[in-house]
Image (tube, rainbow over all chains, first blue to last red; front, side, top):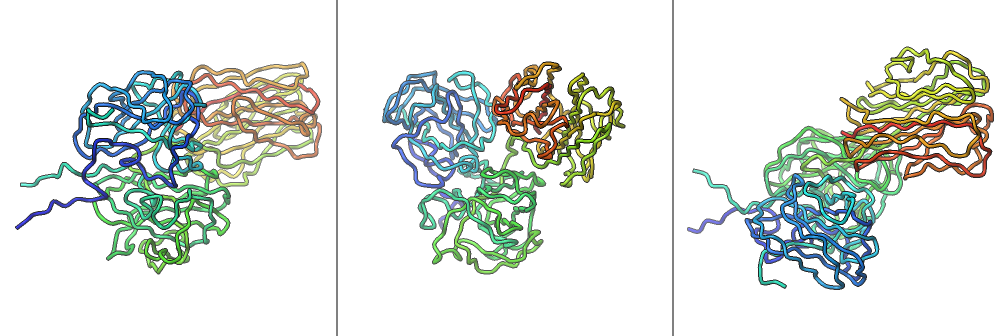
Length: 177
Length: 402
């Protein structure tokens, strides 16, 4: 006799990248990686992601597009808004998966938030540009920061005018990039 | 002995018709990859969408995405139903509200409701055929495979009587598994202006205030008002707490607030010295304000016997709580001097105004308002161009969000 563990939902496994595309909310329309200008300088954008198992987070990454003059910061937060790990402010590079080292950090399973901040509103990223309030409807939160560095504790709020869903994630496999 | 699978799927904060557990779980599903657009509702038609809850969770709020057209008197109700053999059955919980701001996600608190893994049905109904929500189209060959519907279903029935769906749309709504720090929002207003010499002014409210919401009122009086004599604390309107008061040679004003007990019908100001040219007043309602300690801080600029075309509210202390709602009021000696002008409140404040559109002599009242989401010192300046300079004074108050 073979017993099958009951599972619910779409999947019970993830691969080397846990990100806002494969583990976040659902995109409400077609995504573009052709370049979306960052909505506001020093705005932290927090996107919920589902972590299905216990993982060791090795690196954080974000999809970037052509325009790069500023700095960015990437981070990972728990569901209460406490920062678990973050990169430091780093010059943005163009049109790639920009992968940044992060202190190896065990997380999951559970709900977490990937975070992105950019120092200006002209640098471009890969992402979705649905009209507001679609991002708010997906549980994406924001916070206006005094600088590009992500805070140790998020003071986030629903942003009813946000029209940018960034593509970013965490690598749990150390050999990538 | 029981084992709990470690491979449970975490619940997202927003469970929705557009989500991993909803009917539109990818941008290609339902044959439509367009972003949700503003689409009208069929009045009192409940739509029931299935949702697969993967993990035990607690539903704390229901929500829906408003479209580009709202009906201020239109109601929206959103609920969660148990499954009854692959169709909606008994209602578990629901929440309703007047439709709020356009193009925003509107949240309503509900009784915390535990949902165990399984199939549930989310329901949404609006009471007017001109109300809009955010929706994608769904091909007419599969709409009945994605949802049910029920006519004449406002309020949402305790037990659903679903029939095959015929409307080609997938609306964006759902429930939240934690309480989002939603910002307060302006919901209603009434105003009065008179060109008679008066020492009392009353506004009959054109809306029925909701218990627990903030009521804010400001009055502007021509020339010196003297002391306020209303029955509230310090002479404010009944039940109100006085905020800022200014009585001077050219123009006087006062502002006050209360947490509504629900059902107030009028607000009245009384003062000592009749305003020879007349007076005006405004009453507004704001949802999402803390009922225990609503006021965070306030400031005022008590000028001004010089004719000007701009006036600052004064600058408050830095707020001690990031989420809130700021309301400023400005009084002008003669409303006719700014009526035809272009008026602007700085720093992102939106304007409302008490004005009868004709009288030139009464003191005018302009209101600026803005939702806040960071710690800050609050200031806004009312400026106008195209009118005639006049004496003005202003104040601002910041209220704490729930």
